[in-house]
Length: 270
Image 1: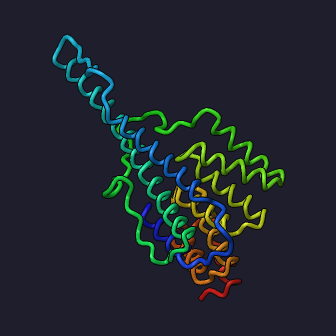
Image 2 (image 1 turned 90 degrees about the vertical axis):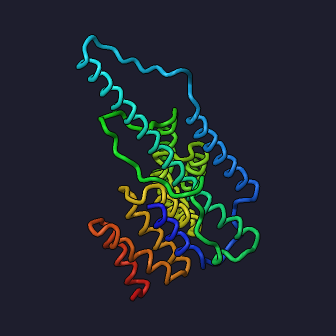
Image 3 (image 1 turned 60 degrees about the vertical axis):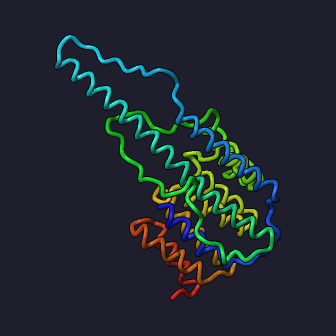
């Protein structure tokens, strides 16, 4: 859930020392805020009507008219739930991004990141739980043109051992397709590329982003394990032990549990 993801971020990163100047500038962060603003404008357009109502209730008998109204009600309910899911996903993703931006801004300005509070939910209030569609329908989220191909190209560079090219392609992917349904996969691959380049600190952020993108998805256990392992490499032993311990708590049947326990043993976690 979003709150758990943000709490884990604060727990894992709040006391992490600055080992190098953050690669992002204030201009980069301002650009990310612009992207969030664009997403909010898209949501506002969803609330605008497109013309006069087009509901057509036909039929020659009472039963036919009742059946037509039931069918139309089901269609409208399914469409409403799809829009609700979409809004909630944007709120969750936007809140996580704002929390990360707040952390980086404080870090760039030399402030105390340990005093950061919980990030406010984007738009205010709490995001509503996603509801299941009332009737079978097509997937609510579709990929943009070139989205899948761009991710495959980046992963091909990673598989070929070209970590620098893969990291650049995946960073571009995140900028080009904010809120992508492939975000968890892309951030996981970016973390692996950054690990290959020896940039453990940025790799940890990528693994965190992968976990936050889908906290219950198939990549979540491995992302949490890799985040904990990266924190251990950075010398944040206490946070690493807590993060690694969460793998077995959240995903007791996942293969990453064995890896996490092995890493905890090496770190001397109690």
